[in-house]
Image (cartoon, rainbow, N blue to C red):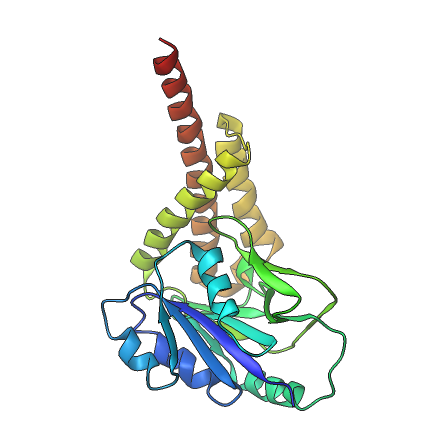
Length: 260
């Protein structure tokens, strides 16, 4: 039987973490949690499910997730966010997988289904939103920038059929708060990589993002929430390039000031 270590990072997740921990209880052989010094009941809740609870200073999503992986003792690691839940169908699929003969596959992708504005979003770029989350520790690691981190893997992959359920945003305010944070981090990554912004990008890229989500990826089939997601995704792109323009402008002004 294959054994799975589940790796999770947390910070003040008392409202969400128990739902996640309950969903992995049947298929996990070990649960490892890296917490960024939560001030709520996160540690108390987690201690009911695992003894492997560690506190570590926040170093960014990629480094925090990789630290959780490094604390795992089994080669197969399932990396989850604190707002993600294994669907009942996925639990059954994983249970079957654990009892199958091992292969040369190094990692597995899962579709991710997000709950937003009272419904499951089955269109736009939010679905199927394939995520590489189950992988061999010996062949993979978390990589990437400040945001949009992903698993860098050596070897072949396959896909599971059933989804991870994503309870990402309690309300619009939480989405806007995260959009503000992520657009800032993404702009910083773009800036360091030499990315440029311009007036035409500020106009064209958000428009393309909306058209892609609402029409090409059929966001209209998700009703009013599909329209909202398409607009918010477009707005996120706008803010990312606006903040990138601001970073270049600040760097230019600093250069002029230092030169004078």
